Image (cartoon, rainbow, N blue to C red; front, side, top):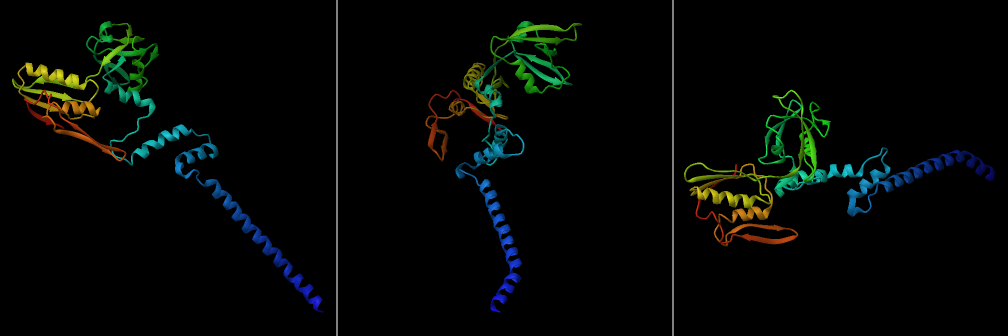
Length: 299
């Protein structure tokens, strides 16, 4: 009778035991699967999370992505968290930023503007390649090396890139000129085109001179020195230095120009950083503007 009771009890509880085992299996399996998912998402090495995430996206993302393109898009956002003067310059834009600081580039020597999808020459650089072959202000560029650039809404940067090129290389321009019925063709030999950072220097009155400096490039000090000496020879005793719109440039050039206004051993500026000890820049005794009354305009 005891055995019969046990058998009956086993028969009664057996379905319950099967159900319990099944639920336990599902729970354990779910936990295992979750563990696998979390394991896949763990970032290693943790010291290089960004690169690890990029590698994971590149390997596992459902569509093909460009790790390089994603990286280029991420970096500017990283720089946004620093000071306003810390910027990232992509490789394809480096030349555009660097050229104004080195003081020259190789091109055809024109200033242009795009009006109604047409590139119009505003000015030719004096004694430059375009002026030498007879390009005139007002000329419209229709084609460059046989490629149509009129009426296609070509960005200014693209126009600049196709007009510039290695020194000594030849570029063919098809030009429309109102006074001529036919399209004119010019072969222009590219040459070094100077970029000036002292925009203007002239006498306002018989004794007051004016100099505008747009940036501190590699040639700025020589330009400034030449302009000051010329204005002095014209009777300058007072000077206005216009720095409005100056985008900065080379520190050593800015220091060299500041040195022209300060007495010997005056502190001009110092640099200091978390990874770099303080470095002081002092004025020398060679300032060419010490005998002038000076006003600086910065805003």
